[in-house]
Length: 439
Image (tube, rainbow, N blue to C red; front, top):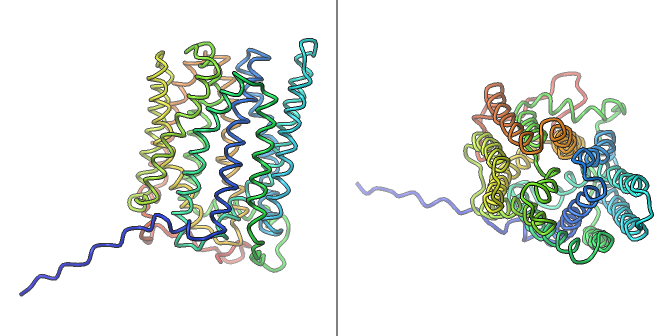
């Protein structure tokens, strides 16, 4: 009796999201915005450290942006599910461009006779306003992306957006470091403003999208807390957010890289740019791989192992005194974080109903986006108390402990497969009387 050989499984379409013209416009906008943000991070971080020579000042810099982003995130999520998300993004991009232009003006006007405290206050103030724009813009951005492509292309779109973000993350820090060394902080900020306007133009090319209708008679308080309630009911989303929160909070090293560049490895602003770019190189390679080989099977286990690998790489970086070994360690932090990023975004987009996307994105901002700035504060305080290198490797150890705790407490995340939803993979159904419902 002849044996029937099953046909080979169809290979994932690596260009599925790119077949939509508006997604290509979104990709252009994302590339310009990400490049601007990366250059801004290099410029303002190095400028603040040059003015103060204080790791704690770098920590305060992170807090200044985190306060408005944290305080406005839930409000921003509420309006992202009520107002036109595209309009919110267009307004917040203009505000960010104005802040970059203001930073350029402050840097050009500051002279040898200008008090450091005055310059520092102006820098912090403009960063604070940029944080306000982020508090409203980030939830709208995450929710708006899902309206550009259909659900089957969500994972592919996440991989492409992540790839472009990481590619600009390679160019942005390196270019920012070179401009700081050969040009000026003011010139760098002016270029950031121009790139942000280019991002605005990319968004303008995308047509407005219809908003999902909010639940009838929903109170404002219930709307503001809707994302929190949904995330609380879904241990998989909650566990994935907690993993990234504590990994970045305790294992993040970006805020202290100016200290490593100047005082430990002694490689200056050019070396700082390369160190900031190294994680992006690793993440870019992994995300390009994910466009053809999406991590759908054993997704939860892969996420847990990836965060653990991130923690180990941070420990190696902290103990290294060789610049090239440090670059390799930072490269692997990007490799692991790239896989983690694709999986986390796919979990959010596949498990969240459309009318809640803005508010769930706001919760993600609270857990993940602002963990970068709160992690910067934690890094600055820990470095002041323990020493820079010791605080970094201790944070890597805490990251490993967090992975073990989440793996133990969230068995649904350990067994998660994004490719085939099983009984333990589905988000929980809403309970009677709750205002949050599945779309």
